[in-house]
Structures are given as structure tokens and as C-alpha cells.
Image (cartoon, rainbow, N blue to C red; front, top):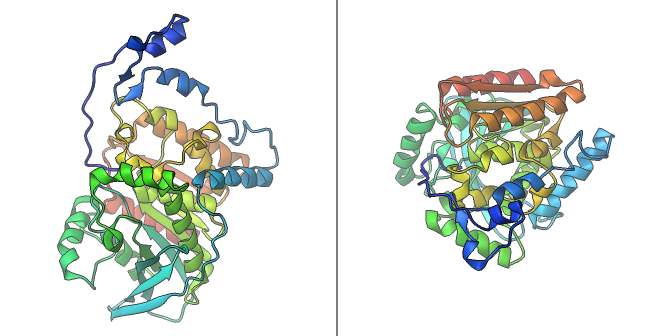
Length: 385
């Protein structure tokens, strides 16, 4: 989700949707789109979304069976092959030591289509260590990806951009480096379009997503599959304790974190900062998601006919999960956050595991991952891993 985007308001047009809901005849001249743009019959489309596969609403009463069914529904809507057994074939290089940890670049095959380069940080010591799959945000800034979270010791040209990003959103910290200092192995990779795999231009996003759909695949589905495979790769490293792997992210990275926890049993816990809401509450005039563009990285067509956003995150229950939101975050209205939190809380409570779910809103903060929130995440990771 892009914190830089601002929506211009458009005038509502009373058209075909009003006539349909009122039982009147519809002429061609009455068809219209409204603020957003939304179809003018969007309230009827919202009303049709009942999320019948959600836990508690689904006829499946056994939780493990429900998890399998819900995960299968998400997998089906990724539109990418489920069983990609391409060898990771990791190549390591660019090694550098700091006082507390070793930095190196790693290149892996997350799918059969492309090799992906990432930053891998390992604390000094014998290990095996707990580990974090660190997932970068969107932010409408594509020249850096992994560099938003890990100081780019290997590329001076990206350091200025990365430093400015850290100052704006992370209190000047590089979150990955902070985690490595605290004893975690950290893996951070570029998503398609960012860093070494970009830079994508902002107004190219819808065309890129459209071309994926034309090719029978999905941009958001590729990201989900790559994150799932990255979690498995990290868990299999000799230096990592496979029982103690977490996914952590901010903004789009937060979405990726809880999504990876839902889709991968390699993730023991997940911390998501500034990306959780109810779908209906997010799809309102003026919300950033109505612009398209960045939304295509987080859109699985048709999935909303089965599951709401927090329903997908609930597939990870009863594992430990942390959701932090800013009360002044313009991207996620407070009512949507409350709806999502209520749904999440009900699922973990049904598993007698409410103590494993932490939900917190910082009233004075917006769409940021500043040091108070980072410290909260660090403390929580220490407690659950």
C-alpha cells in the first residue's frame, strides 16, 4: 500500500445501480461509475459478499479441516502453480563483517522463472539462530526494495535513497540490521519490480498486472508464492533453527507477512505493522486502494467471494501473531481495523489461544514503523521465539 498517494474526490453520479436497486428500468444513459471510480451499484456488490468460508460461518466445524479448505481456496486464487520444486541453488557472495553479524548477498531460485538476489544477515556465534523473513513495503518507491530494510553495504548508489527511506518511516533505523544485532538471522529479498528486479514505474503497475492475467497468472500470486518459498529456504539453512522462523513486515510487507504465515507452515510467528482491515470497510470512496496500481500487488481476483482479509490471516491460527496499526493511518480507516481485529480475536479465542494474538493501535501514529513500534516488535519476537 502506497502512503504517498492522495485521492481526488469525484462527484457521485446516480445511475444504473440506483435504478436496479429500486426496481426501475435501466437505459444506456443511466450507466455510470462513481467516486473512486466505483460502479454505482457497488453497494449491491458489497452486500453480496458474505465470506461463506470464514471460520465460524463455514459449515466445516473441525478447525484443522477448515484451515486446509481455506488455504486451498487461497492457493487456487493465486493463479500460479502450487508445487514449484525448483532447487533453490543458492549462491553466496559480497560478504562483509560487522561487530555483531556477518552480511552477505544470496541469489536463489524462488520459482523456475527467475533468480532473485537478497540480503542475508547472520549473527556471530555458533547457532542455530532464530530467523526473520523480512518483507519490504511498496511506498511507490521502486529503486530500492530490500535496501529499505537492510543497509546496502554492497551498493553506494542506493545508500542515499535507502537512508532517506529509513529516516522517513523507520526513525533512521535499518530494521534488518537491528534484528541481526539482536541475534536473528535475517533474509530480505526484492519483490518483482523493486531493487535489482526493477525499477518499475508507478503507472506501469496495472499494465504489468494485466499482462500477468493475460498470461494466465497473477502478479500478487507470484509475490505470495515467492514469499512462501523464501520462508522455506530460510528455515532450511543450517544456521537457522527451523522451529523459530518469523515473518515481519511494514505496509505491503505487513500484508506479505501475515499472508506468508497463512500459506506456510515454516513460519512460526508473524508481525505485521500497518496492513490489516476488513475488505468492505477498506473499499470506500476516497480510499487509496480504489486507485488500482499498488493494489494489484495485493489482489487475488475472486477470493473475496470466499474469505475476508482477516479470514485469510486467520489461517495461521493459533500461531503467535502481532498486528500493529496507527490510529492516524489514512490508508486503513479505524472501523476497518476494528472489524478485522474483532474477527481475528474471535478465531484465536475459539482455539483457546487469545494470549498468542496481540492487537494494538497507536492513536497518535500514522502509516509508519518508527522506533516505538519496532521496539514493540523486537520485544514480542523475543517473547515468542
